[in-house]
Length: 124
View (spheres, rainbow, N blue to C red):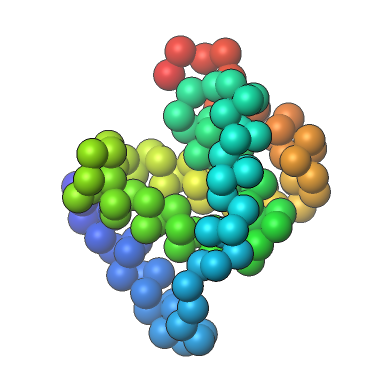
């Protein structure tokens, strides 16, 4: 079931991209390293970090770029040494949503919000 959902998300994203111009998520690629380092310093478990990185990237880049790089990362995990999980994509979407709903207007404001969604001190 998870694979069907994953594949449908991937293809629905591609259909959305067809209506816009095709582009590589350059903005997200430029900022992902520094944002990931910042999220790592905050602590928390994997889903917290996915949410945090996606939120901070969306503050800097278009949401479509951030979602695309999140999907590409999970696809790389399917074929590489990583562990692909639909829950990772869900956390990515929640991070992007915080910015789109204007609940996160800076990295610091975002931090309090994704800490509510994925508490850092949880054992998940």
